Length: 60
Length: 473
Image 1 (cartoon, rainbow over the protein chains, first blue to last red):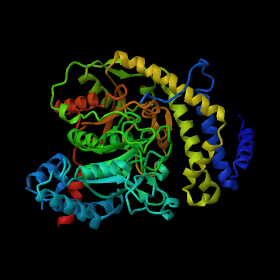
Image 2 (image 1 turned 60 degrees about the horizontal axis):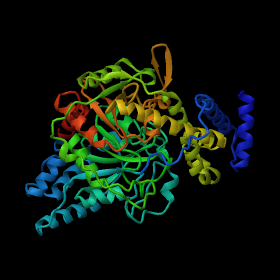
Image 3 (image 1 turned 90 degrees about the vertical axis):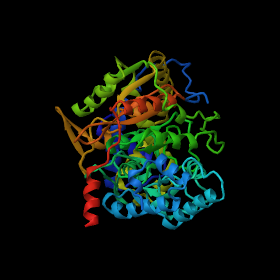
Image 4 (image 1 turned 60 degrees about the vertical axis):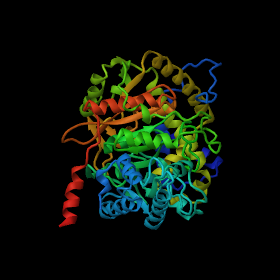
C-alpha cells in the first residue's frame, strides 16, 4: 500500500471509530499502520485450510 | 538486622518459621533497602511501609499462636503496578488509570502469595499499559538496570525484574503478553516464568491483550520461583481463561536428579538478528543439554501475527480513552494503539487461524523434543534512550526487536522459563527453555540442574556493592 493509500485508510478508519487525530498524530499513526502492513504481509498470504478452526487455544 | 538482599525467599521463610527472624525484621530490612537504592533505579511506583508492617505483624502473631505462617512466611514481594491491590490505584504505567477508583479487592495472585505468608511491599514500574519492551515510562520515569543503571531493564515488567535483580525483594509478580516477563528477566539476569496460557489466574490484572496475556513471576533462584509458583497455582473461576486443572507442584521435584532429556535448539528465525553474545549464551545451554539443532516452521509469521493481534486487541480495549483523552497517553503508545485499532477484521481472523496452525506445528516438534532452547533477546541491555542498534550490516530498532524471539512462543501459550546464563564481567543475558503445555515441572527441573552444573544463575550486580558502600560512608 502506498503512503497516500495508507493516509487515506487512516483518515477513513479513524473517522469510522470516532477518533480525532491532529496532524502530528495522523502522521505517526500512518507510520505505524505501514509497519503493521509490513507485518500483515508476512502471514496474510499463507494458505490455511478452511477447516482450521481457531477455537480455544489450549484445551483447558 | 539481617539484610534480606543476601537471603533467598526460602531462607527468609525458613528463618521466620523457625523463629530466628521475625517477619517484621525481614520487611523492615527490605523497606530500608528500597529507600536506599530505589531512587537510583526507579523500580517502585509505590512502597507501602505501614501496610507491609501490619501484614508482617500478622504473620509473626500467627506463628506466636502456633499457627503455620505459610511456606513464604515473612517474605517480602512486590507486584507490577498492573495487579490490583485492595485500597490502591492500579496505575498500569499510565496517567489515565491514576484518576480511576482504587481497587476493591486484591488480584488473585497477590492474595495467594499473601495467604502463603508473603508480605506485599509495593507496586512496580512498567511500560504504559504494558505496551513496550524497555520500561522507559514517560510518566513515571525509566527503570534502570541494576547491572548498569545507564541501561534499560527491559519491559514491560521492568520494575519487577530490576527489583529482584537488585535484591529489593526476592520475588515479584509480572505479566507477559509478548515477552514482558522473559525480556526483562534476561536483561536483568534473573529467572522469569511465563507459564502455560491459563495456568495462573489473571483476575485483578489489568488486561492488555486478553487472548495473549499471561501472569507470572521473577526470582533470583529456581527454588524461590518454584515455591511462589506452587502457591499461586490452581483454578480461579474469576478468570475465564484460567484452566480448571489441579495444581501440579514443582518444588518437591527440584532436588531429584534429572533424567535424560531430548533437547532441541531452535535455528531459523531464532538465529536471525542474533548478536554474538546472545548466540554464545544459547550455545552454553544447548551444549550442556546436548541439544540437537532444529527449526520451528512459521515462527516469523507467528511473530508478525502476534504483533498485529496485540495492536488490534490493545487498541480496541483503550478505544474509549483514545477518543476522550488522547493527550493523556504517551504519544508513542497512543499512536501504536490507534494504528492497531484501525486494522481490518480479516487480518485478525487470519492471525487467529494462523495461531492454531502454528500451535500444531510446535506440538509436533514437542513430540520429538522435551524442551526447546531459544534466545530470550537478540542482544543485552541497551543504553536508556537509544533507539537503534547496529548488528552487522543492519540498524535495528531496539523497541521493535527486543521481543523477536519471545513473541512467537507466547502467541501459542507454551510455558517458558527464562534462565540467566552466567557470563562473568558481562551484561546479563537469558535463554528461553520452552516445553509442551502444562510441563512447567520439567522446566523447573532443567533450570535447577543447569544451575547446579554452573551454567545459569543470578549474580549480584556490582553497582549495588558500590552504591551500598557509598551510602555507608
